Length: 393
Ligand SMILES: Cc1ncc(COP(=O)(O)O)c(C=O)c1O
Image (tube, rainbow, N blue to C red; front, side):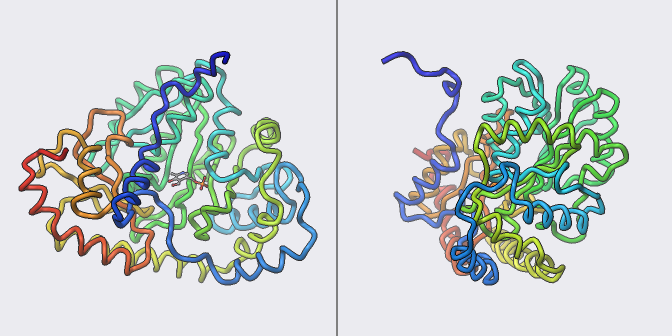
């Protein structure tokens, strides 16, 4: 057999999927892979059934069905105040995963540098490798996950093509303040850099924090590639629908990348989600209230168990600090956790570029019963972990 491409040589199995597998093997409550175990809104399911009898079974326009793009532009204007032309500034993709890859391929030539904050959502590393871009990592320093302005500027001085900004952030739960975003914007302008944002958790931001769409900052619209998704906002991670908003010149190139990568997203689903994109404000406040409740339930449980963690400002993840358990290998620790305690988590090292072994990530996008069961099981964690005395094999 001839040799295969070396592109993925440095890829390891996705730690999130590995932990899901280990959770299943051990019958553990799986709080590793971040997806809800509850249904999408009823109206969306009903509309899906109707659409199956309508005539949406063939290819749609490659950059997204007209009605979906129009509904997206309207929704984005409602929440961000930005005016987008549905024909010129919007591209529908197969999830934010494709949107981010498409954005990278749109702006980067092989060898170009991109700034990535660490800890980061694991796909960004793979996106960089697949586009032959070189990441420059800038630490978000726990427990508050702030960045050092001088370190960030030093990264910008290395002539990067783009910075990737995940806001609200997975895994840290950080919601960047307007002042922090303005610092990034000033550097992006000074060093003439694109800003690729991943805003899939835009509607999961806990009071008093506020989501600021990066493109709304002065003069940022022209250099911002806003990526987001319907996966989280409507609890439809399996539908694979995401999108990009950007300047027409950028979207024109992104359309070409998307066309040859996927041709397009699923037509019947694009038609179905128009219903969701037209939901009124009450949907979004109820949706946030559900997550606020889940966060309170889970976080209060962690507090009761006297575990140390960073309270997330947005998204649905929490990083728990494991310093007190003398963890030297957090992968082994998570395997032990699934086996001995019966709860699945993701080792923090899979998100950090730095040598960090003292965090594990749980997600709380689960039914209350699932979260309560996980908390019940975690009651034995402290005792068992201290007894293990650093030996988690
Ligand atoms: C930050 C972030 N971006 C993107 C995704 C994937 O989004 P999609 O389902 O739209 O591809 C996730 C999923 O966990 C995520 O956490």
